[in-house]
Image (cartoon, rainbow, N blue to C red):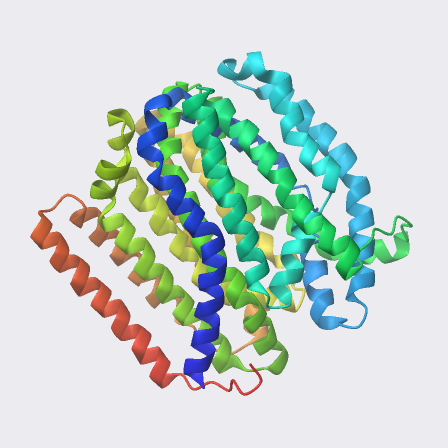
Length: 477
């Protein structure tokens, strides 16, 4: 039975991964084509724009994601009514929200972007104003109904479209960072539209604008405490570039960090694919009070991350030599290691925090995620002026490790389950793999092959061990 569950989990993960990873791989393969037309300043400018945009985008759904997801399981007969209310409320909220976003961009755009100020603002806010929360609700609908192919097809189509348009705008029209801006706006509109149509006409999710404040007060009391939690993703993944800009580091130096950080984003997509696949199974296991199944899923999620991140980091030097046709960007390969290995936090993070989400213990999540994000910003402010951009990669890794494992030690988590996930052992394994990747990235080819085979064999052994020794009840899967 455990084999059947694993097949279903990994098949869904593969489908979700296809939507992000095939197009990402295509994007990586065209790096030799586009990098000669881009500079560190282009990467730095785009990094700053993305950082400030991310700072505001966390407010976009004001934490209502958990209301939408929980209503699907807790009120299966009337979740569509709840979603219609959510869509109406968010449509109204998106108007002042996007005004705020546009005003922020007007003020903070770097010098290199000032001549394109109004283009950037309009291209950033128009997709959200036109189609509201259709992307968020559409993704959630297909995910919770365990229909990953619907998500994957869109991901692949729009992913390849993004790659093609980036090549056209950056290489053919030599638009620099503005190529990314135009491409993102166009593809986002199409992507949102592709979900808006089936939601509205097939599923019947049409907005209800009558706001019953008595009902919304209860919902917002659950959702708003999640805002610090959601801000953690920005504070950990995007605030580095904002801090560097505030510290007045040169834009090209920010670009030297932002380029390897983009590879961290690729692995964020991979971790997100696993996360999307595992979430319905985890929520179902909590509903069934099946702790063995939950642990089985989380452990194998973690091992899958170990194998993928370690492989990339160990061979990052060779990968950059092949893909990056720009010497100033190629030399940043070593910064990839702490950034990418940091994404191993996701497996155990899901193991602890999905349970808190399911039982709506949301008020304690800030103690994990927001504190991790704030510590990342504070450490960057203190140490970047002294040690340079390498600090940002290290502090991101440390903060992600805290976020991944702190949840197991919260009182609320311990009250919900007595199951021991051995978090310290998994943390030690993550640190050990990171150290091995650092030490092995510059060694000789034959020694690197030996390290690679030996380490991957160990991960495979543990995978097989958990498959055989954690008994799960999967009859209802």
